[in-house]
Length: 227
Image (tube, rainbow, N blue to C red; front, side, top):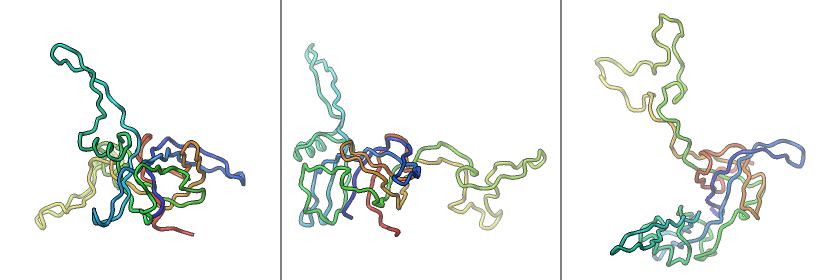
């Protein structure tokens, strides 16, 4: 893997290509990501690049001490993580992830990874936590069929038979039943980068990308490229 970046989802819109065709796109605020650590084979047993994304907002609180008010600045991170950022010489970041690049030796601590590493026409994989839909029934959650809607059926949107009676006297694991839906990691493969705005660090990706607005999106070059 040579291309990867962290992004946040801005929303969806549509643009016109040069041939006049209308394309629905998802706008991603990709980077800039700052390299906070270089993992090496000698020290860590593997090679990777650790990056940070989105500055952590500084919180200012007042604390009474001996009858006096003292202003305390807090970054919302622990001492160990703050020391890790200070050692790298970067500000405290909200998200920290690792990428196993093939060219790890080309990166240095403090360098930035921006959206211009991608080009129009690149194929990517986008991963994010999907939208949460709460508690849902078996029809919406698993796509099961409903029962007859006549008044006498008394079976409309139930999940159906749960299992055998005396043998094996239990419900097998994996049975489609009502429950919590969404809030799982979803990866959509082979998405096309339609346009790249290097000045604003924007990626315009054809189609939809999992997750709600402002969600963290991991963008990587695709692992199943199609011609």
